[in-house]
Length: 638
Ligand code: PRX
Image 1 (cartoon, helix red, strand yellow):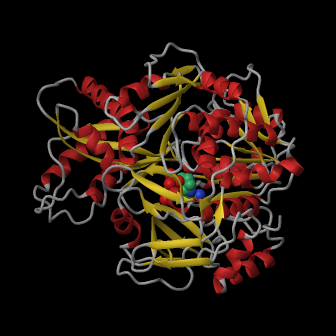
Image 2 (tube, protein in one colour; image 1 turned 120 degrees about the vertical axis):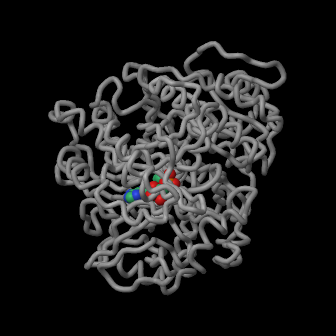
Image 3 (tube, protein in one colour; image 1 turned 180 degrees about the horizontal axis):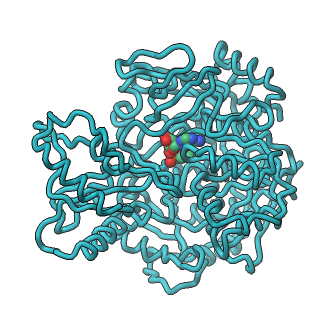
């Protein structure tokens, strides 16, 4: 396939063309995919709505692009290599033929259980091949999947199911994570009390921990597969989809309110993830590609499942955690499966770096050609360690900047083609027209400048709406700057025109690469019966990138601070999930508020960062004294 640029010059020319003649550029890329019917119109758009349509009138099914079209040439090639949590358990390899067979079988299971095109399906599964199979089967039947990450609580699942009115849930008895078993079905059961829309639950066996199975509602995955076998026809013709039909919903946190369901559509998302995967990693047939993310996040959707498979790649998925049985696990997997491209997150790099070089030195990295980083800004020290220890100075690192909303990379080097600099995402991807904006809403021209990062022209992988609430989509992404998509990130363009992401400029945290809204955490803390009010901010954390710092005004029921911290943590785990537990909880007797009642987070952020020398102007505060007391309390916590 002809999706890859060949040189830096070629990148520059490609980029120029993509900006000057975007429709011609993207239709050229889209032609490399399989369409049942070609589109009538490449693009129509208006960021005011927003109303963005790519490849209108085109008909396709993304699974024909990810599976069927590879069978003739790549049928026996591994599509998925699966490495289990326990290194002593046998790994699995699914060829393209097998994966297609399994997806067709499971599409029949979905059909037998009443699923039709347009239904919403919640998937809450461990990182096993059946997760990819379930996702692809939904896409094949035209059902809209909403995958929920295994670390979210029953309440979070219920909120997501209710928002999308899911008809069916696909889960497992449990999941293995290191030495722990997480009882997924139990968690789903806790959620379902609130979810009358759910008619059926399909339960995969993984840990074989006891589960409650309710007659008429819950069925075993394996039994349903047997039924399809008895029915005798394993095939399932892919449903014909419009380019702009919904493919999936993925919930993500913002600065206000509950998580929003970001919606991606079939045609544009397919083209964008396939193109950026092939081009950015410069994937070559035969390469083994290993992305350590979970399919519960956008990285797994775009760059474990859809992007790699649409390109006929071998995608390695890993069930466990990088530190089990020890901090050398990822490197052992690299050797065992001869991984050529390794794509991971700064938080993993930092934690493995912290475990000491004994787990790295002497390991075999000879197969590694390319490295990738995603999810948060990568600090220079981690970049250099990754480069030296894992890449042996030979493997380009692509620091890919993107978001759930962008569908795929929007700023990134291209492996081995464009230059790289530690902690820089470097260059816009072809088709991406960036703008740095100042606080007054003016675009900042020239180099050596910083501003709020926006995109001023549509690209095929961008979100189309937030499920059930289009106005929220407009307000969140398209209202801050007219005719621009606003990312929520700050960005520097240096003297050479290279881009460096400086982090979120809103109240969204990035904790171990997990996106969490401060308002969500506050809401959860405030649900605790003895909490009067709280304010949550982020602070720099050596491993997690950002930690969660909560300032809490407690009532007078609980006098023991340690017990109260435990109770607050439990409450947050119950409501959102353990990933949102505050790292630090400071009890305070008041919060710095303006006379109009607004919490001055700027001050709290500084205190949480331990930088209290210059707190700026505090004269507008209702009670300036409160700051001094909070400062004293913070010192004790440090
Ligand atoms: O702040 C940016 C950060 O992660 C945010 C998006 O989070 P999410 O939607 O969960 O997607 C994560 C995986 C794509 C962004 O707004 N971010 C992501 N990648 C980078 C990054 N920050 C700096 N450098 C990156 N490479």
